[in-house]
Each structure stands twice: as structure tokens, then as C-alpha cells.
Image (cartoon, rainbow over the protein chains, first blue to last red):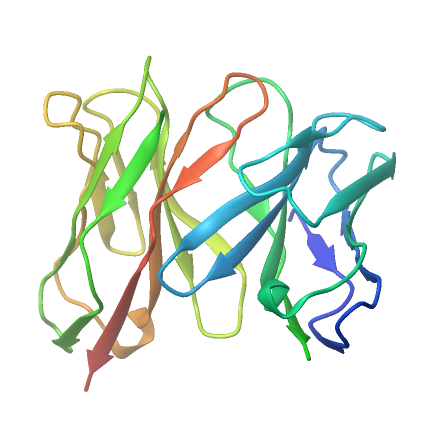
Length: 114
Length: 113
């Protein structure tokens, strides 16, 4: 089975802190994604990466950056956390090549910024 | 741009009732369509998918048919169980090659015994 692992399930951080959310997938997928999920807003794409060291902005990249130094790992970085970044963050991955591939999600990281 | 619209509001129903969750989409070209389910405290899991018009996806008693003429992909289940209580998201693939997904806002389904 494909496994997407998010290292932290629950985090509490202070305003202004730098926050790292880590995601690892074990199926050699080319594409990886970070979404945030908020009540009433559904899932919104923050960033995605289709190869090592490659990244593209999603719909809401402001206040975030990402790093993909190795194929299996995709990190989301909040340079200076703010309370409006309190949310659930979901990592996902999929192989390259076409619309029909299933996207696999991690279990999510609940981030609270106080 | 490409988008997905789900019916508003949570859905509450009794065990063994019929469930329908409406989903319509706007897209250029011919997207693939998906339903994902999120059980409490968990990430999203693929429930079913359809990759071309008139395809029917099915899994765990759930079904959805890709209707190009009405741009819809409604989710149905004939007899729900308490264990079906979850949030359901409709989604479509919007980008060739990179598999970007556009999601609807999700519907909370609560099944009462």
C-alpha cells in the first residue's frame, strides 16, 4: 500500500515562530502537494512539486514556502507563523503522467498558532 | 477556471436511508472525477473515481456516474450505515501531467442509528 506519512499530527506554535511540516511518501511518486483544510472552505492548494527541487505555487502560497531536496520528502515551511495559519494541513502524492492517477493523502497535521 | 460545486450544508439521515450528495463541475477539456472520504481524525481516502463520460465509479456500496451533458458526478448509496458518517469531497483533475485536484467544499454526513 502507498503510504504518505506526516511526521507531526498535532502542533502548537507561537506567533512568529518558524514552523516545519514534514511529509514522506514511500512509492517513488514524482508529484507531491500541500493543502490546507478549513471548515466551509474545503481543501485549498498551497504548493506542489513535480520533481526534486521543483516547486510551483498553488492557490494560496502567501506566507508559506516549500522544500523538496529528495524525491520522497516534501516540507512545508511557515517562515513566521500567524494565527490565521491555524488549520489542518494535508500532504499528498501521486505518480506523474496523466489525469487518471489516484492522489494519496497523509493523515493530516493539525497546527494551532497562538 | 476549473471548479467543483457541492450542495450546501451537512446531511443528516437515519441508518438504512438513501444518500445523495450532489456535485457539479466546470472544466475545460475532459477531467477525471473523484470522490474522497474523510473519516473523523483522518486524512482523505479515495472512495471512487471515473475517468471519462458515462463511466460509473463504485466502492463500498457508493456509486457515482460521470455525466458530461449535465456536468455532474453525484454520489449515491442505497442504504447508509452509521460507519458512513464522514466528510465527502468531490474533486476533479485540472492539470495534465501534474494531477492537480480541484476540490468541492465537502459535505458532512451524519448517520443516526
